[in-house]
Image 1: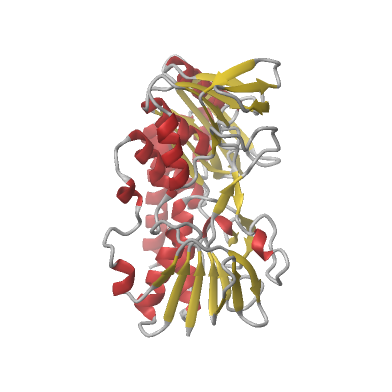
Image 2 (image 1 turned 90 degrees about the horizontal axis):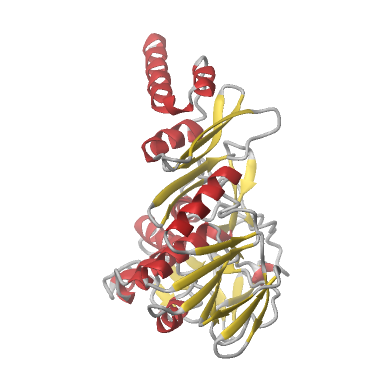
Length: 421
């Protein structure tokens, strides 16, 4: 049996290792589109800060790790198409690779906004090690850096840049920071916090043009012009699935999969940021591009690829963000659902905000800023679909009683289980 894995990120590596564990004699090939050894993009901010060297980004630190496991790794090539009938993958070096089982784990790519000058020298995404090398050359102490985008990834990049001592301006199209993770109050509090730390944040504005000169000249929709030594585009990412456009593999936002991480074509699976996985809890297909999902989905896909039935229990929808020392979190349906109830508690002086969303007597989503003690409990209540009973009304009256609610319902469940036994 020959397994081909497209993508050399965490999902691809975990899948390959899982296959080898359960199928010691099968062939395994990982195809990565970068010349680097398999690495984690999540480590790039630590590289920018200077906490680690490039080798610290590598997923496995033994240079012989893949050889010892008899996992072949083909670097610096990209898939251009999949022939599902012939069971082959076409690569951009002109070669064709046959497979018996295929895993699509190609991850995401930065979205490139249609802005004049976006490809000018001195304008970079922050997505690859190549990007990081260029940014480190330009983001010297005192350099003027303009970052487009203040979403989840943008905030992580922003923290690394601030640590380098640059003069940083962040421009966000939305009316607040992290608009896809935080409501207006929470997003506004994060903005105020960043400004108190010396970062200029401009919301409700977009970059309209970048004039290629030294220094760069950036025109905003407000009519203002800003000079910059470096412009970073952090305007979001999208699944890297363009090469599947003419295949029989069905894609929506991502590669559509069932609970076994199998696509619409038998024997072809997907995992990680490029996968639109079926979430048994919500009953919907979801793209949730976080590393815990990539790891879980890769393991499930790999087990099914070697004939061991395994199913995804949930698609985790969690974001926990450290923005210059301010911790915020978002879980589940944080915006709420039609007919649901919600409660908010804000203490601006203390830098704290808590928002809870309910459907019936279940907590289905929440936001928090500066309220770290409740993060684990919020996750447990949301993902566990815990029926709160009378505790829902208690939380509507005082949302800070989350831990009490969690413990009370856990004790009630345990007592019920003992009675049934």
